[in-house]
Image (cartoon, rainbow, N blue to C red; front, side, top):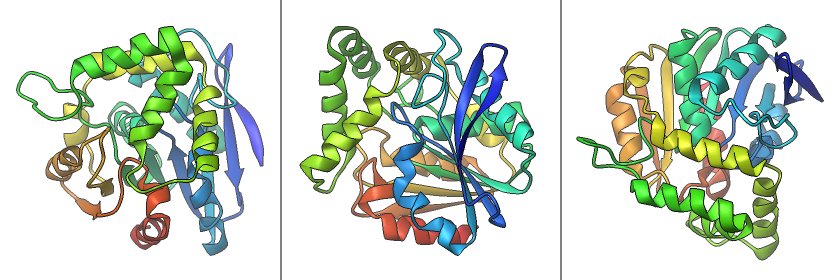
Length: 268
């Protein structure tokens, strides 16, 4: 069941609500530059076990409205808060992949984890996607600047290059086309502005504020969010568990989907 939630007077975000009468709720936040369909291989399975799966398209992505502004982590987490309050969700698991993980972590600090009983981070871009002074992990700043410049010049080529490093295991050409199409459903300006947010914002304080049990799933071959960031997350979050995915890159939710789904349900 799909519907829209008003998050600002002129902005609505799309919500896919699968098995709304399930007794265990997981809210999924997708990574850049995709949408809720990124979790197709979870939505196919988890509802069979009584899970209510809620996939939110962030503003600017998928079926959501695409305003020109509002792509900082504060605003994106505020959008999530509006959805949670509108749907009156309580005692749910908040789960985020990559940039979606960063938004989830910001939500935990900014909105004091309202309604969240457990947190799950998948290859989360936390505490910083780029290397900084005294933080020698993540991508080079120039790599992100190149992604931004490529988006201005040739977005299809940028998305294709990004897809080439996303997975560690082989994926079929039809799958590559499907994955590429997820990025085409985003607004180009939203694609650019979220990449700018990677440079402008960091989440060190956000991480240490988390008090709920947290599951960290991370592919050891991740070329986008290096595995070291998952290790830092485990050290920074008091009650957390890191599970390495030995045969995955950034797309562990697909590359080892059976293990991924089992670990997620086991943790819940």
